[in-house]
Length: 324
Image (tube, rainbow, N blue to C red; front, side):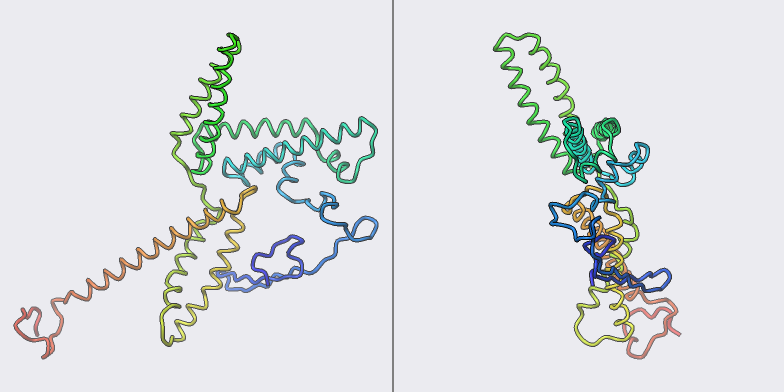
């Protein structure tokens, strides 16, 4: 059993269970064992010798080969953060370099490998350049609008600070060598960098919600009392056992929804941090609600309704309001 199994070759030979709580139906998803065969019928060679055809469907491949209009939609729906789009830009630049190398190889009359032929058939230098230019504009717009997480802000502040120091050194050298035109150009560059650096330092960091954040919070909040109930010593009633039995189902649904919420080019640490924030917020809200309910119940217990009946034991020197 693999709870994280998905439609990929690594999940071959596994299964996972899923409980649809809305329809009260349970499913078992089976991923059969498969054997990949090459065009000649033999098994594929070692991993480093495989064609990139094995990467069909990967985010980098789809972004590289798709039409420009589709690319724009992919970026909007599959990448939220500046860091994700920056990594996508690096993938595109890598694809451009590979395509250029293939073109040079063709010009020199050399035979192409299957992977190189695939690169040439599915890409074009103009299409990749158009995507790179548009994505660079999107990244600049995100910085200008302050759409940066705390980590991205710190990264940019550090990078810009280092760049400023380097330009200052170049400017000082140009002045010392009596090169007024270069010094003037570097001075203008310094002014622009300083302004941009100051802007980024003033940015109020943002956070990007998970796609299914509302439902994930509900599930985390539902698990909180179950964890407390599970930790209580002693025997449990049948109703309590049924409640505790829901916990694994909630956890499985959380895992599935989190995986569906993960964006392209999002590193494990970044995604884990986002999920942890959602879990912490849900737990805090559930604990506050539980505490408020206990206080209300305690306050209600202290109150005596005016028409409450008195017993012989409760009669004494205290005021006898509502006695009948």
